[in-house]
Image 1 (cartoon, rainbow, N blue to C red):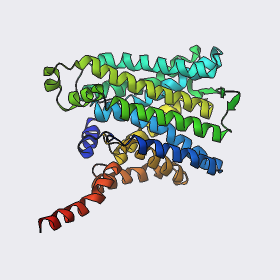
Image 2 (image 1 turned 90 degrees about the vertical axis):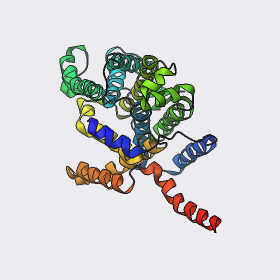
Image 3 (image 1 turned 180 degrees about the horizontal axis):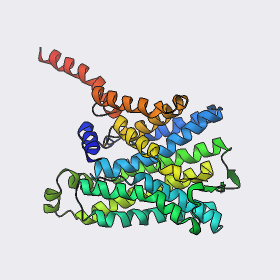
Image 4 (image 1 turned 60 degrees about the horizontal axis):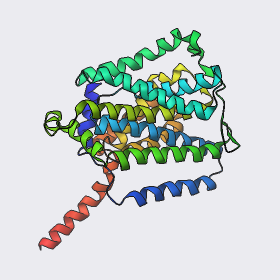
Length: 341
């Protein structure tokens, strides 16, 4: 796991946050996707895009800890599952209204992230990776043992109730409603991570601690505070995405903790470009769409995605986020030579 993280980190190159003044471009893209939602009538295409939006939240939140804060966190999918199970149990077992359950599930996942982060702060490097991945591995048996508490055991939880907003019921069949809800959730979540948090003093503290913890501490940066904040914020957004996923699919099972989900998340960051906006977002779209297109490939699907990662790291070591720089670099060099002449 640490070798994978090191490979992805080295391939990412210099960390990049959104440039100043790019807010208008960001919201223009979000507006274009909103307009596209009115033009797309195929329910399957809408379904794939909804998954893209939800995975954008998960990938961006993981990029915050792994790419920018430098925390070897491999409990991301466990936090996603925690959000999904929390809202499912609250609605099905306690009768909590879906919107209140989503809010509570988000808070519960943030607290779980805080609980995981506290022991991690006493560990370094590969030990953090091993501890967080052990949390992921421990989730399935815990779900089975807690069957009496309402987790559903290996069968999971079926019939998670739909969300109702302003009298509109957002069930699995209401694709257009879910399209706009998922788009709004993803747009706001990604904006908060990259345009607000990472541009702030807090974001600069994350990067400083990642690059040189000793130097950052000498400048008065509180390592305990900022690493705890990074992990908790990432868990909060991931839990929110997991809760939305549960209500969208109406089903939550231990399959959500399978190797496929965590591998897909890793591939998203590797292909998109870790620590380079909009790498996580691009990776989420590309991998989610490819994963759906390759459904007929069966067991070869993950193999094909693995080959794609290798090719991406060979041809674009810094991910898809660096494609723009690569395309502009040759013309910039020619311009420099011509100016010199």
